Amino acid sequence: MKAVLFDLDNTLIDFMRMKKISCEAAISAMVDAGLEMNKDEAYGKLFELYGVHGIEHQEIFQKFLEETKGDIDYKILSRGIAAYRKMQAGYLEPYPHVRSTLITLREKGLQLGIVSDAPRLKAWMRLAEMGLTDFFDFVVTLDDTGELKPSALPFNAALEQLDCLPEEILFVGDNPGRDIKGAQESGMKTALAKYGQLFPSEGIKADFDLLDIADLVNLV
View 1 (cartoon, rainbow, N blue to C red):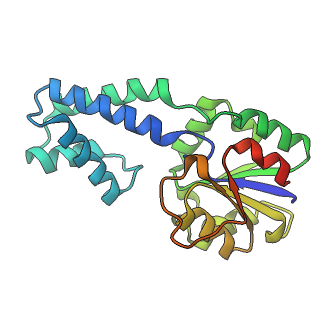
View 2: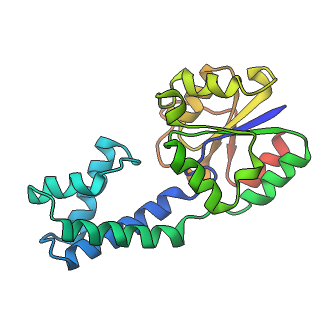
Protein backbone atom coordinates (compact mmCIF):
# COMPACT_ATOMS: atom_id res chain seq x y z
CA MET A 1 0.00 0.00 0.00
CA LYS A 2 1.12 3.53 -0.77
CA ALA A 3 -1.77 5.46 0.78
CA VAL A 4 -4.48 5.13 3.41
CA LEU A 5 -7.73 7.08 3.23
CA PHE A 6 -10.10 7.43 6.17
CA ASP A 7 -13.69 8.31 6.75
CA LEU A 8 -13.84 10.74 9.70
CA ASP A 9 -16.90 10.28 11.92
CA ASN A 10 -17.16 6.88 13.64
CA THR A 11 -13.85 5.86 12.05
CA LEU A 12 -11.33 8.27 13.58
CA ILE A 13 -13.68 10.18 15.88
CA ASP A 14 -16.30 8.65 18.17
CA PHE A 15 -18.91 10.96 16.66
CA MET A 16 -22.11 9.13 17.59
CA ARG A 17 -21.20 8.93 21.28
CA MET A 18 -20.81 12.71 21.29
CA LYS A 19 -23.99 13.17 19.25
CA LYS A 20 -26.13 11.04 21.56
CA ILE A 21 -24.84 12.63 24.77
CA SER A 22 -25.18 16.15 23.34
CA CYS A 23 -28.72 15.49 22.11
CA GLU A 24 -29.74 14.09 25.49
CA ALA A 25 -28.49 17.31 27.09
CA ALA A 26 -30.32 19.42 24.51
CA ILE A 27 -33.62 17.61 25.06
CA SER A 28 -33.33 17.93 28.85
CA ALA A 29 -32.64 21.65 28.52
CA MET A 30 -35.59 22.18 26.17
CA VAL A 31 -37.95 20.31 28.49
CA ASP A 32 -36.70 22.40 31.42
CA ALA A 33 -37.33 25.52 29.31
CA GLY A 34 -40.96 24.58 28.71
CA LEU A 35 -41.13 21.90 26.02
CA GLU A 36 -44.16 19.83 26.99
CA MET A 37 -42.94 16.44 25.89
CA ASN A 38 -41.59 13.26 27.47
CA LYS A 39 -37.78 13.24 27.22
CA ASP A 40 -37.55 9.74 25.73
CA GLU A 41 -40.24 10.53 23.18
CA ALA A 42 -38.52 13.81 22.28
CA TYR A 43 -35.13 12.12 21.91
CA GLY A 44 -36.65 9.49 19.62
CA LYS A 45 -38.34 12.15 17.51
CA LEU A 46 -35.11 14.14 17.19
CA PHE A 47 -33.21 11.13 15.85
CA GLU A 48 -36.10 10.29 13.57
CA LEU A 49 -35.62 13.73 12.02
CA TYR A 50 -31.86 13.16 11.79
CA GLY A 51 -32.68 10.01 9.84
CA VAL A 52 -34.76 12.03 7.37
CA HIS A 53 -32.61 15.15 7.03
CA GLY A 54 -29.12 13.81 7.75
CA ILE A 55 -27.01 13.65 10.88
CA GLU A 56 -25.23 16.91 9.95
CA HIS A 57 -28.40 18.98 9.38
CA GLN A 58 -27.68 22.53 10.54
CA GLU A 59 -31.21 23.44 11.68
CA ILE A 60 -32.40 20.16 13.14
CA PHE A 61 -33.61 21.72 16.40
CA GLN A 62 -35.70 24.25 14.48
CA LYS A 63 -37.28 21.41 12.50
CA PHE A 64 -37.81 19.47 15.72
CA LEU A 65 -39.75 22.34 17.31
CA GLU A 66 -41.78 22.93 14.15
CA GLU A 67 -42.72 19.24 14.11
CA THR A 68 -43.51 18.95 17.82
CA LYS A 69 -44.86 22.42 18.72
CA GLY A 70 -45.97 23.78 15.37
CA ASP A 71 -43.66 26.79 15.64
CA ILE A 72 -40.22 27.81 16.91
CA ASP A 73 -40.06 28.99 20.52
CA TYR A 74 -36.69 30.76 20.67
CA LYS A 75 -36.40 30.46 24.42
CA ILE A 76 -36.63 26.68 24.11
CA LEU A 77 -34.48 26.60 20.97
CA SER A 78 -31.65 28.65 22.46
CA ARG A 79 -31.55 26.56 25.63
CA GLY A 80 -31.35 23.37 23.59
CA ILE A 81 -28.59 24.59 21.28
CA ALA A 82 -26.56 26.01 24.19
CA ALA A 83 -26.75 22.70 26.08
CA TYR A 84 -25.82 20.76 22.95
CA ARG A 85 -22.75 22.89 22.26
CA LYS A 86 -21.57 22.81 25.85
CA MET A 87 -21.76 19.02 25.97
CA GLN A 88 -20.29 18.60 22.48
CA ALA A 89 -17.06 20.33 23.47
CA GLY A 90 -16.42 17.84 26.25
CA TYR A 91 -17.24 14.59 24.49
CA LEU A 92 -15.78 14.84 20.98
CA GLU A 93 -12.70 12.63 21.02
CA PRO A 94 -10.80 10.19 18.82
CA TYR A 95 -11.05 6.45 19.30
CA PRO A 96 -8.28 4.77 21.32
CA HIS A 97 -4.98 4.30 19.45
CA VAL A 98 -5.87 6.72 16.64
CA ARG A 99 -2.94 9.06 17.25
CA SER A 100 -0.34 6.31 17.71
CA THR A 101 -1.60 4.53 14.59
CA LEU A 102 -1.39 7.69 12.48
CA ILE A 103 2.14 8.32 13.75
CA THR A 104 3.18 4.80 12.71
CA LEU A 105 1.58 5.13 9.27
CA ARG A 106 3.43 8.39 8.74
CA GLU A 107 6.70 6.77 9.79
CA LYS A 108 6.07 4.09 7.15
CA GLY A 109 5.98 6.84 4.51
CA LEU A 110 2.31 6.41 3.58
CA GLN A 111 0.20 9.22 2.16
CA LEU A 112 -2.85 9.87 4.36
CA GLY A 113 -6.14 11.55 3.50
CA ILE A 114 -9.72 12.01 4.67
CA VAL A 115 -12.89 11.48 2.62
CA SER A 116 -15.84 12.68 4.70
CA ASP A 117 -19.53 13.39 4.15
CA ALA A 118 -19.29 16.21 6.70
CA PRO A 119 -19.37 19.87 5.59
CA ARG A 120 -15.89 21.34 5.07
CA LEU A 121 -15.68 23.57 8.15
CA LYS A 122 -17.13 20.93 10.48
CA ALA A 123 -14.66 18.31 9.25
CA TRP A 124 -11.67 20.61 9.69
CA MET A 125 -12.90 21.82 13.09
CA ARG A 126 -13.23 18.25 14.37
CA LEU A 127 -9.72 17.43 13.21
CA ALA A 128 -8.38 20.63 14.80
CA GLU A 129 -10.15 19.97 18.10
CA MET A 130 -8.63 16.49 18.19
CA GLY A 131 -5.18 17.77 17.21
CA LEU A 132 -5.12 15.57 14.10
CA THR A 133 -4.89 18.05 11.21
CA ASP A 134 -1.14 17.71 10.62
CA PHE A 135 -1.34 13.98 9.95
CA PHE A 136 -3.26 14.38 6.69
CA ASP A 137 -2.15 15.47 3.24
CA PHE A 138 -5.68 16.49 2.23
CA VAL A 139 -9.33 16.39 3.30
CA VAL A 140 -12.21 15.84 0.86
CA THR A 141 -15.61 16.94 2.21
CA LEU A 142 -19.20 17.25 1.04
CA ASP A 143 -18.57 20.87 0.05
CA ASP A 144 -15.79 19.81 -2.32
CA THR A 145 -17.92 17.53 -4.51
CA GLY A 146 -21.57 18.10 -3.58
CA GLU A 147 -22.02 14.33 -3.43
CA LEU A 148 -22.25 11.88 -0.54
CA LYS A 149 -20.49 8.53 -0.55
CA PRO A 150 -20.86 6.01 -2.19
CA SER A 151 -20.89 8.41 -5.16
CA ALA A 152 -17.67 8.12 -7.15
CA LEU A 153 -17.04 11.87 -6.96
CA PRO A 154 -15.56 12.02 -3.42
CA PHE A 155 -13.30 9.05 -4.14
CA ASN A 156 -12.21 10.48 -7.49
CA ALA A 157 -11.41 13.78 -5.78
CA ALA A 158 -9.14 11.87 -3.40
CA LEU A 159 -7.48 9.96 -6.24
CA GLU A 160 -6.60 13.26 -7.90
CA GLN A 161 -4.60 14.17 -4.79
CA LEU A 162 -2.55 10.95 -4.79
CA ASP A 163 0.29 9.73 -6.97
CA CYS A 164 -0.64 6.05 -6.87
CA LEU A 165 -3.12 3.61 -8.39
CA PRO A 166 -6.50 2.82 -6.75
CA GLU A 167 -5.38 -0.72 -5.89
CA GLU A 168 -2.46 0.76 -3.94
CA ILE A 169 -4.87 2.60 -1.62
CA LEU A 170 -6.57 1.24 1.50
CA PHE A 171 -9.82 2.95 2.47
CA VAL A 172 -10.94 2.69 6.11
CA GLY A 173 -14.56 3.42 7.02
CA ASP A 174 -17.39 2.39 9.32
CA ASN A 175 -20.32 2.41 6.89
CA PRO A 176 -20.48 -0.59 4.52
CA GLY A 177 -23.06 0.97 2.21
CA ARG A 178 -21.22 4.27 1.83
CA ASP A 179 -17.54 3.84 2.66
CA ILE A 180 -16.82 0.25 1.66
CA LYS A 181 -19.12 0.12 -1.37
CA GLY A 182 -17.88 3.43 -2.77
CA ALA A 183 -14.21 2.64 -2.25
CA GLN A 184 -14.53 -0.81 -3.81
CA GLU A 185 -16.29 0.61 -6.86
CA SER A 186 -13.37 3.03 -7.21
CA GLY A 187 -10.92 0.12 -7.21
CA MET A 188 -9.49 0.61 -3.71
CA LYS A 189 -8.80 -1.99 -1.05
CA THR A 190 -11.07 -1.63 1.97
CA ALA A 191 -11.07 -2.09 5.74
CA LEU A 192 -14.27 -1.94 7.80
CA ALA A 193 -13.94 -0.10 11.12
CA LYS A 194 -16.14 -2.52 13.04
CA TYR A 195 -15.40 -0.68 16.31
CA GLY A 196 -17.48 2.24 14.97
CA GLN A 197 -19.95 0.40 12.71
CA LEU A 198 -23.58 1.49 13.14
CA PHE A 199 -25.17 0.16 9.94
CA PRO A 200 -25.49 -3.48 8.81
CA SER A 201 -23.20 -4.81 6.10
CA GLU A 202 -26.09 -6.04 3.90
CA GLY A 203 -23.86 -8.38 1.94
CA ILE A 204 -21.05 -5.86 1.43
CA LYS A 205 -17.74 -7.45 2.42
CA ALA A 206 -14.58 -5.43 3.06
CA ASP A 207 -11.15 -6.87 2.37
CA PHE A 208 -10.32 -6.53 6.07
CA ASP A 209 -12.21 -6.05 9.34
CA LEU A 210 -10.74 -3.85 12.07
CA LEU A 211 -11.71 -4.41 15.70
CA ASP A 212 -9.22 -1.71 16.72
CA ILE A 213 -7.70 0.95 14.49
CA ALA A 214 -4.27 -0.20 15.67
CA ASP A 215 -4.82 -3.41 13.65
CA LEU A 216 -4.29 -1.26 10.57
CA VAL A 217 -0.54 -1.12 11.14
CA ASN A 218 -0.13 -4.80 10.27
CA LEU A 219 -2.11 -4.47 7.03
CA VAL A 220 0.12 -1.91 5.33
